[in-house]
Structures are given as C-alpha cells and as structure tokens.
Length: 394
Image 1: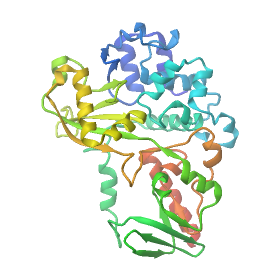
Image 2 (image 1 turned 45 degrees about the vertical axis):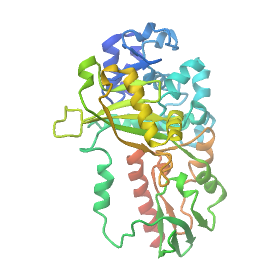
Image 3 (image 1 turned 90 degrees about the vertical axis):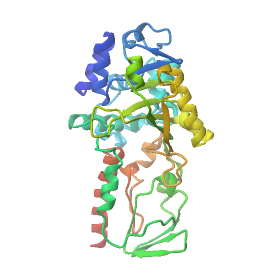
Image 4 (image 1 turned 120 degrees about the horizontal axis):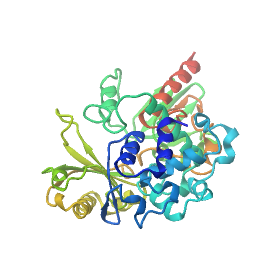
C-alpha cells in the first residue's frame, strides 16, 4: 500500500484541518471547499453532516477520498501494475459491484464515485481492473515527485503537445480529415475527406477509438480488435473557463478551489501568470452525466448555467464571473471525449488485443497504454508503436 493512501485510510477518524491537508497532499491537488446540496460544508463539520452516507469508520473522509480509500483497503489483489493480466480476470467487474460488496450504500457510491467521476459516467460502467490500473499510475506519479497533476506545465498542460508539434519536421499535412485507412501487408494508404490519398510503408494511428470508429478500415481489423474500436467509451467532460473580475474568494474567505455535487463539478484556480500565487482564472469541470447535461444546453447556455450555479454557491462572486470559453470534449468531433474507459468485462476482452498491428497499420494513444494514463500513456504507447514499425520495416 502506498504511504499516501495509507495515511488517508488511517485518517478515517480524524477531523477538520488535519484531515483536510492529509487528503489534499495525498490526492495531488491543493485544498478545496466542499459544497453539498447548494451549501458550503466545512470539512470539520462533514463527519456529522446529515448528508454524509459513509460508514462510521470512514465518515471523516471527504467525498473525493472515500472510493479510493475503499479500493486500497479491499482490493483483492495488490499487484496493481498487472491490472490487465488474465490472472485477475475474475475481478473484471463494475466498480459499483465492488463497492457494494464491501458495504457501501447506493447513496455513498453515488456521492463518492458518480459525482465528479473520473472515468465512465457511473460506477456501473467502469471496470474494477481499470480502476486498479489508474490507481497504480497515480501511485507512480506521486512517487516521482514534482508538481501536482493540474497546472504541471507553465502556461497549462496543453503547452506540452503544442511544443512537440512545433518540433515536428517533414512533409506535414494539416487541416485534413481522415475518412479511410487501407492496411496491407506491404504498405498502407490514408484517404482524406477532400479526396487526398496518402501512401506510405506504414501508418501509425493515434486517433481516439471514439473517432476511429467513424473511419473505414480495409480490411477490417480482427473481430475482437474491431469490437474494441467500436465499443470502448470515453469520458464526457465539459470545462467552463472563467475570468474573475474581482477576488471574490478574499471576500468570502473561502478557497477558490471547490468540490460540488452540482453542475459546476470541481472548480480549480488557475495560476499561469508571471506571479505563481495570482489566480488568473478558474475552471469548472463538469464530468459524466453533468457534462452531458451541459452539452445539451449548448456552449453559451452552459456557460451561463455554470456561472449562475457558482453565484448561488458563493454570493460574493455575483457579477464577478466572465466566461472566457466553454470546452466540450465529448462534442468535439476529433476527440469525442477525454480518456478511454474499460467497462466491466472489457479488460479481459480487449486489453491484450486493442494495440496489435493490423498489417502495416499500427496503433498508439492513451487507450493502448498499460502502465500510464493521459499524456504519459500517449508517450508510452508511442515508444511501443515506434519499435513495432522498426521491426516490421526491417
């Protein structure tokens, strides 16, 4: 068990600021305020709050820590790095079934896992094995030291792929939409929407499966791999980027970071200016079902709805919030979601097949990674794909 998670579980009967700081350090972000049912709940009051559905021994844990603590306490295998190993296939069950089997009520699961969900849309559609893999990745990242997950790169995490793109050399084709890929034993061909055809000795495809499933692949990949392409889901996340006109957090005395059970989701202060302590903007992350709801409203209405929610939760912010941008990853035709999610049974079915080369068509992307997630998973998979191409071309 990683020391950080051990501290969280051991802190089950602690209260107030001490627990607040333990959890903040363990889970990779700064302190955040808890808002339940439209009101602010000091963490010192949470253990005895009427909306706290957790078992007595874990009532002091805030909602964002409960599911992780249960996972670390009760997971039936400890070698998380082998989450995809067929040896553990019997645990390819839903996170819901796992938590319920260990005494978590529906109310506890809904609050602690489904609210501000990281993978899937509910605990019913996420595999326990995949969640174990995510836990391993987080442990490795925390052990490496360095800055926390959010805001790790100066100017924002997007600056990393932008810098990598600028470093690319060669005959780059930009502004092309791929509609078909021909994969042959001796070469490959890519067809674009404008009729352009590009031939090569090999094609490396990094498209998310949620977009690749709309590309014609000839011949079709093997049945299991093709099923993975067509069925693996991606997390819907909609971000509302807001520029504050005044420092409302100084007026109400609360941290700008928030964890809410409403459509504002989680709210993080962004400090990307010349002064690392100055809050330049705040970003509301709506996830899962909340993101899908905002997407139905459309960008402008979604922005207004989130601002109204934040003003309701924090009256000091009224009139001080200007929406800079609404970013829906699920409705982006070139993303169709954020990161991939293996559902119950899908680790056993797909994990070992999803990245296999198909003729001269090779696959990379975070959905094919086994040791990492996100950007780190993309880099891991790129190294693997590069070796595969080298071996195939001799």
